[in-house]
Amino acid sequence: MNPTLGQALAQVNHIVLGKENQVRLCLACLLARGHLLIEDAPGVGKTTLAHALARTLGLDFHRIQFTSDLLPADILGAAIYDRESAKFSFHPGPIFAQVILADEINRASPKAQSALLEAMEEGQVSIEGETRPLPSPFFVIATQNPSEQVGAFPLPESQLDRFLMRIRLGYPEHAAERALLKGVDRRDLLANLPAVLNPVDFARLQQEAQAVHVSDALLDYLQALLAASRGDSRFATGLSPRAGLGFLRAAQAWAYLQGRAFVQPEDVRAVLPALVPHRLFPAVGLTNPADDWAARILLEEAIP
Image: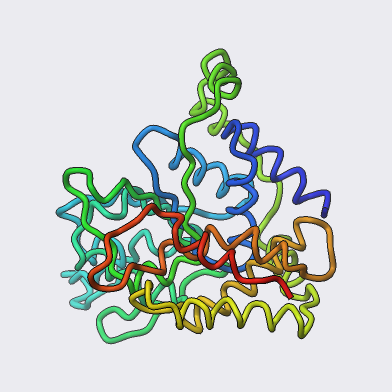
């Protein structure tokens, strides 16, 4: 593994204890130029993880607290009339940063949520008839509470598909929780967290991850997984071409984190549980099973 990436992983794992696999998935997601959705119950460290990632990677970030009364202009910005100049001047919103921490994204109305769609897909926003580019790199790291909780709005499928990965943290294991209870407050650790990377270095690492070799046999396996999702009557719809492209980039990033210059089927299987569950839903008439049901079905697909 690249020494700098190893240092970055170690630093985030020092903040979020006992979640090494989830932290590695998060870093693979960002290396693959994807947006990240962290879903779990309140208080398990979702926001802490997002802050630790942004600070460690040395990226400029803004935090947006999503609430039921949030408006698109609160995210994108607005043109405000200036009496002295008798002109409208644009005041950019918090979306103009390299990392957006969309905290509790599903507590905002669908109208507010939709303000992120163009930004997440095209790296730009259209405001007052003008298209404005966003900084590069641009990531959305969103946290959301379980949909059954009071005041939560479900994210539409079009927005879920824009998140490359969705992960869950879960409660810490006994040893990790004991270390958490006896250790320094995580907020104090975050306040003094140094940057391990900078935007230029991180962009170079993204290019190196994208250059990881993918064989034709590996592409056959990936296409077999996509076809299986589209041909299974238990799924309402299959994985989209955008999901397939993200799948490939994520597998390359995972292989890169493992220190390899080529992708193995095991890399695809490692990232699959974070890419599939938020994209595949039961067909009409079927009950909604556990979250990992779709991943289990696709993992049954034979490795070439």
